[in-house]
Length: 169
Image (cartoon, rainbow, N blue to C red; front, side, top):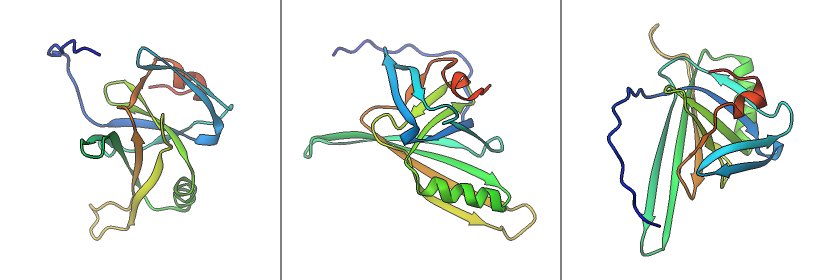
């Protein structure tokens, strides 16, 4: 492997995530990576389900860990969603997410899709349900999903998730 350098990007860039598509891992047959990009996802019909949340309430943070003594190097991604309003349908869905091995595709606010669970399944690892104390406080759920991988999250080629779910940015 050899280094190639990076140029400064002058385009605009915004943080946050817009939407997520989640499937149970046992409904994904295979993924194809070409030149570092997910080009195809072979999944059962209807495997992916869309999850929407209010703007500026979702994020992904990927941290890398290297231990020379142990000879290990890996990436850990924390995928955070906030769903407003505590209600039965959301509680039931969260209960299913908590016990499932998951595959996740995230659409960021720059219009880029990212694939999580290439090496290991995504799991719901942390969450809160809260009523809030004042009228301005959140009444709802905060969820954190975790993905461990040997590589950074893979970008997903345009059109892949739309073919699987009828999604649109």
